[in-house]
Length: 351
Image (cartoon, rainbow, N blue to C red; front, side):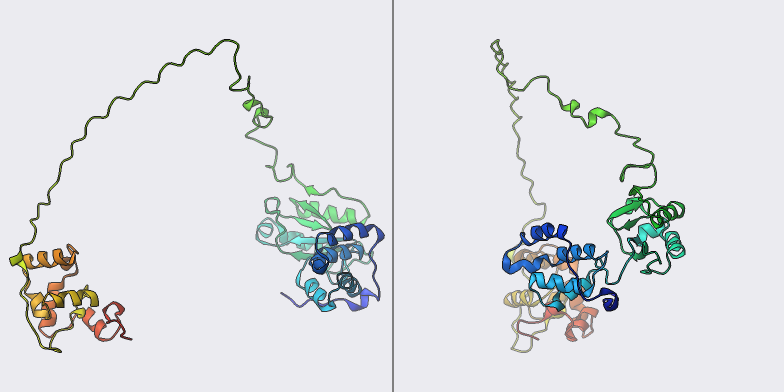
């Protein structure tokens, strides 16, 4: 945000709220507990701006601070932060021209040229004190772009010609009715509605009831016919589908070996074997790459059944990896393990 300073010279030495503003001040102060009345600083600054010809002088900010028992600097901080508060004199009719993307795409730059031609630079006040202008961010009327806010009201769907006429009328002391400057109502489609025009869509007649539901009738109600009983569902027959693959046999267990401490291979260098799987394999008596490299399909089935991960050994190609490592060569994965780049291959407590 750009640095914003007060106009000390134009502000004079004093400020007082207008008598007719006092009830509104009382309303806002009544919304907060006495010890929280500083919460009303923004509405009171807004009222002070209105009572000071559309801008906030330094005496006006001091008056707000005194009313709310706030340090002056705290009120100055609020006033200089929010661009809704103007810190230098403005014209009787201050134009805030939206220059954000929707309005820019619809011709806001052309409206800026009109302002520059008829008023001058931004925040310049015409000699008669009637007009001033500035470019602002989105004012929330994008569907009616381009638009401008003049004092408290929106003027929408502008063209350079219609905007120029508005400024001329205001400069001559005439009033201009706010709103869209094309054939539309508020934000409705230009030219009027073309769909959903039937009156009964909105007057409630489509939902009218000829009589209230569940009213007792003079004649006894006829006995309702018994609801038809659903036919019994056909009995389902359960067919057990047996696994075509026979369970592994005890003799399919891989060959086991005994090794001295320190002579076992680091099975975690095989992709798919982490510390948990390595420990389980060691408990089976499998310590060497050469053991895994020699596994038969029956051995694989037995190990997968024992460790409860069917299909994994073939999917991760343990046997081919083990053959490469047993021959003293490396795999891309074993190189990464040796470099400490594979977290899942580190033992617990290993950095």
